[in-house]
Image (cartoon, rainbow, N blue to C red; front, side, top):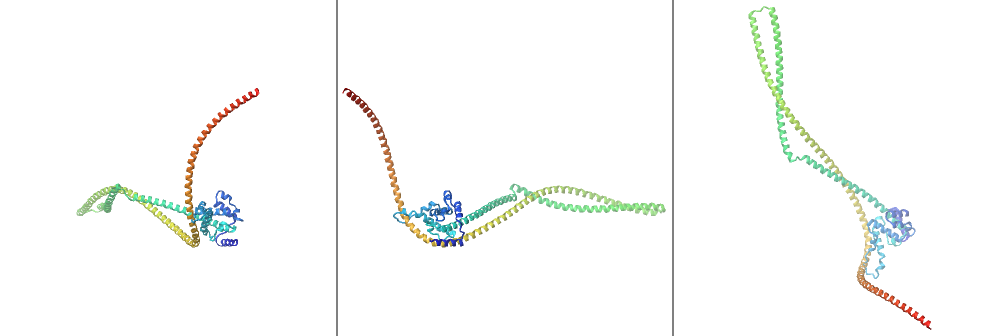
Length: 466
């Protein structure tokens, strides 16, 4: 690929899809986000401009693939051979480059780079590498943002799930409490039934007694009105008698009465007195009857007070039951509110699922588009894989040969070990023999020295004689 074509591709990319970053920004980003340790320290601006280094660029692409797809650099060197080649060692240097090229051809369309070639790995150009690295940087920024968004969504979803679990627990506890409050234990059911029967009887008796009391009160009121009327009549009669007595006294003083008229008046007066006595006796009898009625009414009032006390006790028990019913109603209201919150949470979850479905649909559409573009490239890759399959067969044969050689080497090593053991035994024996020889030589040297001394002494004696 020529430099002009690279410049055109870089310009088209910067115009259409992603921004082209400066070299310093690219170096700083890859040193902080992609590379680690000594690689980050040694990666500098000179590796990209003016003449990019193929080794550093290839290593950088390997680290990008490791970051994104967990594809370690060691895995690039394990591409199998599948062709009977006489010297496969000459082809092994191609395997990592072809592996990186294949992985980058699959990855770079995600970054909107569709014209990646082997020349970008073997003989990279500065502008071309800058555009590719800026595209990868843009994709990594996008990936980081999406990871943060998904992490936030996951945290919110987890918090919602925790809240939902807490609400479900509270709802279950409320339902248990409602069941406990609503269900009467078997020990108290008999008492409750007895109390209900007693209450029914008491209500019926009290109604009858209230009716009797009301009738008695009406009778007492009527009697009181009659007594009042009778008392009024008595007072009027007494007043009339007093007036008549006064009039009689005046008339007696004024008129001399005839005995016949006096007799008639006395008879009249006697009749009036008899009638008054009769009315008084009737009134007394009526008073006695009314007193008896009043005593009966007081007894009825005492019985009514006893019944009222019983009713008050029953009312207290009813108040307690009403309080329990109110608690049950409050718990039911709490249950309804919690169910509403659950419905709202379920609606939110459904909305989140819809949003995720929309996103997945978009991603699927983009994946289909990318798949169409990949199909064209996969045909080329299949051809290359065919060659690799042939090389792989040859490699398997070589692996078998290597295994046989390894077996032979193992056997040879075992033989060597046995020979070493024998040599060690022989060296030990030779060492002992050598030590013996040394001792004998020392003794022999001492004897020679003694003989030499003796010969020297003899020679001196001979010289002295001569």
